[in-house]
Amino acid sequence: MVHISNVKITQVIRTLEGGGAEILAVNLHKAYLEAGHESHLIAVDGNCPEGLPGASVVSRGSPYRLGAAWALLKALRKLKLTRENVLHVHLFPMQFYVAMFRALGLIRCRLFTTEHNIYNRRRDCQLFRLLDRWTYRRYDCILCISQGVMESLNQWAGPFRDIRVAYNGIYLEAYRAAYQAQRSKPQAQGTFEILSVGSLTEQKNFPFMIEVLAACKDLRWH
Image (cartoon, rainbow, N blue to C red):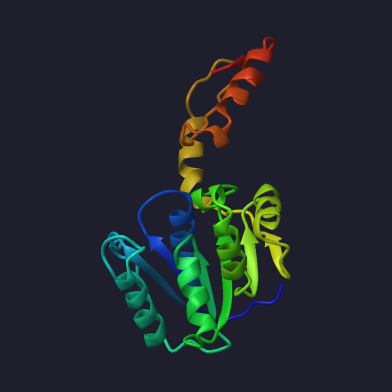
């Protein structure tokens, strides 16, 4: 395995508060710092977590404001990014802002973006297909969190030159202590304990999970 050190990596996201994409960006930032890279994490709304070096919130309010785009550009220009540096962007409208900065020649670095979902409200309007097609083509590489997300994006605005699946990672150490504590509890022999965490939305497909459990009549589960 080849170890690459001293890489300058900057991530951009709307906010550092929230669920999947935000947690992923923060965890990636921590991992980059631990690996010895120069890592920066920029948001344009919300609050900055305490004790997170290299992270900053450069604006306040809606990320759709012109002031948010201007604040982001100033922050990126201050970093003096070069062609050897990596800029990794999460979510709209940050993806559009950074694509526009590149098209105008305001930033010159390698651009990556992650697609986190199979659906967003822009896909309800065909006019946004042209916008997304233009936006995503400004990126050197598009990362998708699942095969389904990649197929959905390709169908909506593709095909793209470099698009690939990169599954979300987790910090195993954060779960090992809880796992050991759970193992130490007395349990009924042969009983499966099942936990599912997610928003109660259609795409999580909880009805299917309930159907599966209902069909498992010969198993003991909690």
